[in-house]
Structure formats: C-alpha cells, structure tokens
Image 1 (cartoon, rainbow, N blue to C red):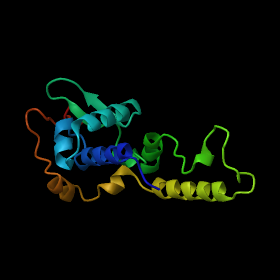
Image 2: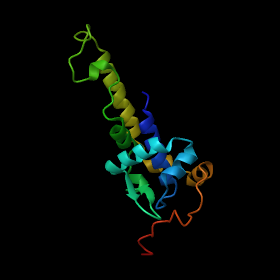
Image 3: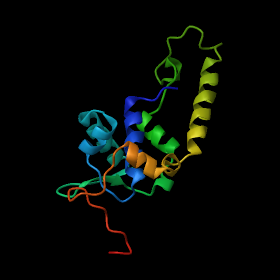
Image 4: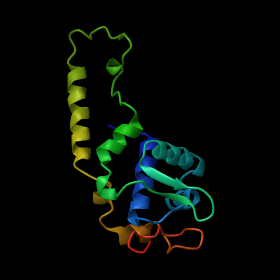
Length: 159
C-alpha cells in the first residue's frame, strides 16, 4: 500500500515535534529540515490541528507542538485519519461498480484482508516508538536549541 504525500508529511511533522516534546516549531523550520514545501506543510499542519493531533499557538513565540504525548499517538490512527478511507481498488467504492466480474471475484476480500493487516501492523506502534533516538533525530534534522522565537513550553512543575 502506498501512502499519500499528505500522510507522509503528517508523519514527518509529528516525528519532528516528538523528537523534542514541549518545544514549539515553525512551519518554515520543519519544511527546511525536511526540504519540503512550506505551502504543503501548512495544509498538513492545519489538518492535523483540526484532527486534534497538533496544537498551534499564534503570534510571537508561537508555533506547532504535539496536542498529546507521543506515547498516546497511535500511528494507525494517524494514518487512518490522514488517508481518508483508503480504497485499494475501484470495487471498494460506494458507487455501483462497473466491474463485470464483481459477483464472482474474490479480489475485494483479499484486498480487504491486506488493508486490515496493514493497519493492524501500524496499530502496534506509537509516535514515541518512532522517535526512540531523539538525539540522533535532532542532529539529522538540525533541530537547534530553543531561540527567542521558539520557546519551550513551561513544564507543570515549573509553572
């Protein structure tokens, strides 16, 4: 199964933010780190915010951060929400099929089993699993220490 660019960027953005929990990042910063379009990433961030995966803060010192701890972000859930009902073949649609062999075909069942296995595998992983080496990720993505425009969110203990 092939994921859409939207889902790819969604997972990349979430991993970037999970590498340094509590730290806010800007769209420009993440786009630069991955070498991807700011415009596309803006759409992704907006969508992830609407779905409850991201929290956004506007204004100076604002940016993006995870809306929940990485260990509570299931990869299967994220992919399901960003893929928007994947249909591996036309016969999965709601519209009447134009397939001439539909009544005798077993492909639909085989593909349904494959999609179920795909999501079952993803459901075994959380965002925290994907960022088990945060220092290596931050080096590779060149995530710098917080600057005045990118502030860390105060921890509950220090507030």
